[in-house]
Amino acid sequence: PGWPKVYGGARMQRATDIVASSDGGYLVVGDTDSEGVYGVDVYVLKVDGSGILEWEQQIGGTGEDSANAVIAVDAGFVIAGRSDSPGTNGGMDAFVVAIDDSGNVLDMAWFGGEADDTAADVIETSDGNLLFVGDTATFGDNPVDAYIVRLSVDLEKISSVTVGGTGTDSAQSVVENNDGSFVVVGSTTSIGAGQFDAYLFAVSADLGTVLWERAFGNEGNDFGSAIALSSEGGYVITG
View (cartoon, rainbow, N blue to C red):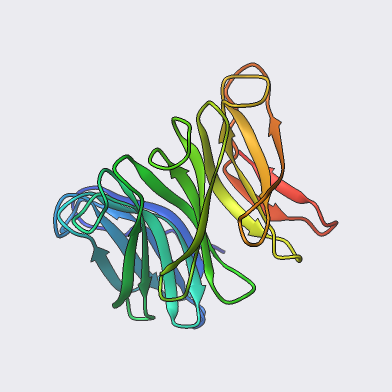
């Protein structure tokens, strides 16, 4: 049987992702405007295997900070989202935070430029580093492009690439193939049959080459939100 639980303070709390922890519990991330430092902050809470709250934490500066994804790593957890707090490069930046198992911040970094940039998903790669995907209005030659960034475990940028056409393109979720390449799902108005179509594309391990791209949809709006590897060697996407 399940265990419905409610967490948070007097105002708004939103959960966006959850990951199992090594002790049998769970870590939940999202954002909150209740008891944060300023405005909206990243909201992190840790529960045990029965859903009992163990600790909660707000992370943020004087702007708006929110979390979209979290993964478990050896040192604790890595959270990806967006922020316009001091430390950013202007506008909204992609925001990555590393915390330990008790919620203490180990490191944080911002990625972007003068316009709005976002991190929507993050994974640990087979070489022990990190990779996040999202979208950027700063880099690339188009209004909004999908944005893919490889990071070291110290949150230093190793390489990055923008992918897209003349329209609006974004990345929402990513998986790594056995050969080290990455397959990303999101949305696009650059190719396809409709307004927004689900967008699936692959990039090489060094992010230097777009290997292929596909669009899925009809005349209306269609979005890709998550991707997983299938047992047959293909991909399952949802949206």
